[in-house]
Image 1 (spheres, helix red, strand yellow):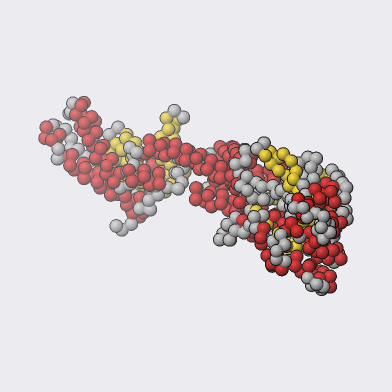
Image 2 (tube, rainbow, N blue to C red; image 1 turned 45 degrees about the horizontal axis):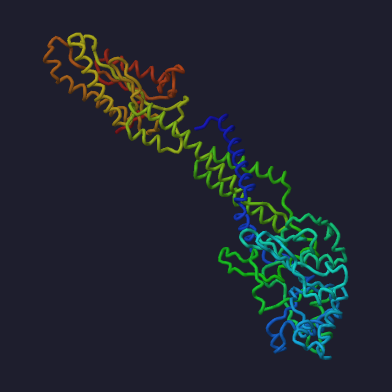
Length: 596
């Protein structure tokens, strides 16, 4: 595992990298799409956030048109005049026509040569007089060309000239600001410098009696400065949140005395717009994204303007969490994510990373309900960077440790033991630890005398053959061939992988070594050299606690055991000579091995 001091440096480094990557992704705009998904999700989860009480929508819908068949919209000015009169009488504050008047009946009739007819010469005059009173806002449109905004399309001159001066105070641009994905999530108070205010913003300004020509305006407790920046639209709710009233109710006889109509309009800003026949004025808003099975719904332009007006008059504004606080919170979360990812395994680290990402998202939604904006995608990007960075560091470090284990143990323990070590979630502690083990010492009896009767090359062949078979016997019992001591062998049982039956394994290995010695006694070495002593092996076994780890100098380390247990096993091996026993095992070993 990574050392503690190195872990701390790695945690800090990963958190710094995660923070840098998240901020780089934000600055390059890579996360805009993801942030839009979260913003849209929060809107849909919140549902209706503010019940409309300041804005009403009057629709020129299909039933109203059916009630006046044969009258084109260009000839509706008398009907609009009647509706305006009723709304004023019911106490409407300001009226906005979200209809771009491009044709005036008077001018059209004059082109047809009907302008001298007394019944038609003043067809639009009552509507013009209604406009002159200053409480009506007409729609204008910013026209775009190949190189950007080019001009403002104003209402037809007949109606434009009827507006009181300054006329720009009564014209609002109905253009809506769209994000890169086409979604309408923000608006600008003024679309272009030295041009009229946007439609909804102008109506809110006039409703509060403020000067549209000013450079700043006050809504609730906040001053909005004309800086051309886009502001988040505080949507009150999904499409349909604002009830729509058919203009036919205003045109019906006795509309002024309609007890149900008065509460719907009194003291409000009223938007007059096309209804079902004007479905081309539909826009994708946060509610137009299909999330969690929610059926996407487009929102009409008048509803978007109504949301802007309602939130402005209510003094509700969403503001981003201060940058310093946001970065501080993000740094803490990334440090936590890095620390857990470095200290824990991939599974636990991944679960914690997911938990942190979900917790941040939940906090973002909770703040959204309080009109505070906390980006989500940047935090989740940083958390992912920290997690995968820790994963790469872990894999790199563990790979080094695996190679070290393979180099250290491959020749001295069985392949199964090495594979068990490599497959373990935690690498063995090679720095020194107290283990309960069984130590085996084996030595060839009178080997010096025996070797004197053989050529040197034969001695080497004999030892190589013997050690190969003895090592295999030890490895088959899961033991570790610790070292070769001249003509002897030291082996450990119970490390580096814990074995509850290590004493029994050691006894079986000792018996196997004696079987090998028996085979060697039957070899041709004895028959060819009658004067040589018989080939015999003594084995000593002892069970107890010993310190096991990498021991030696920095230039030469050896994984071995030290302590009284090792010394006792060595002395027991020496007793085999005096007792003339092939195997001497301590009572501790016999008790640990059990009756089997």
